[in-house]
Amino acid sequence: MTNTKRDWNSYYNAIENRPPRRTILTALAGFEESGFAIDLGCGTGRDTEELLTQNWTVLAIDQETETIQRLQAKFEDHPQLTTQVSSFEDLKFPQAVDLINASFTLPFCSPVAFPRVWETIFNSLKKGGRFCGHLFGDRDSWRDKPFIHCQTRFQVETLLKPYKIELLEEEEHSGQTPLGEARDWHIFHIVAQKNE
Ligand SMILES: C[S@@+](CC[C@H](N)C(=O)[O-])C[C@H]1O[C@@H](n2cnc3c(N)ncnc32)[C@H](O)[C@@H]1O
Image (cartoon, rainbow, N blue to C red; front, top):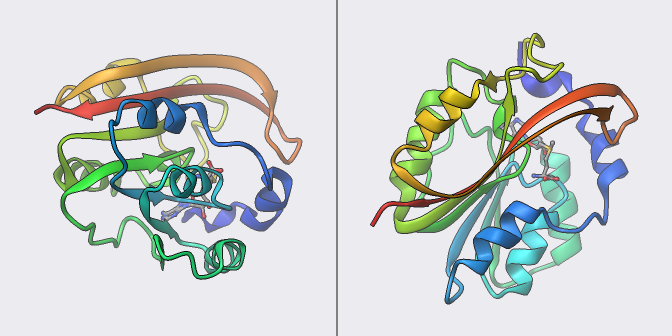
């Protein structure tokens, strides 16, 4: 079963115009100058917009054609933005990337595909480059959904071993999704720098 089970269009309408995630703001604060970033699972582009505002060159990727079309309409022919409709499981990443952002996206990657995607992220980053984004924890109420991939804290720490951890915050509380679904959240907020 794939992540197309989620109703992404309703989600995009619900989160339209939300500000950039704290993880990307934290990661950007670590750079002395702008560079090349990938926004993986960019959605409506809340983080892409911040990257462009801070003069980064951005490759925004999402599997949903509609969200990429929305992004293109929003930023018109922005000279520093390229877009790609692709599932990240099938993606060939460019090399020498300064920043890879995956906000609330990698949990939708299948557990089978995840190790290769994670390795590809690492291999695509320059030394000193950063990964920022989110993973879901093993106490998340979506852990048994077939299209969701959750990790224990130990697994997250193991994944981050080749990086210097700049932010690793664990958030756990009951709440709602932007679509109003009741949900127990267990989220890891991550900013990590690839070792020099
Ligand atoms: C929860 S939304 C987050 C969107 C945006 N990053 C944000 O923070 O608002 C997850 C996004 O990941 C995309 N996505 C999910 N699975 C994907 C996959 N396998 N390959 C590429 N994109 C995927 C969805 O289409 C959706 O736009």
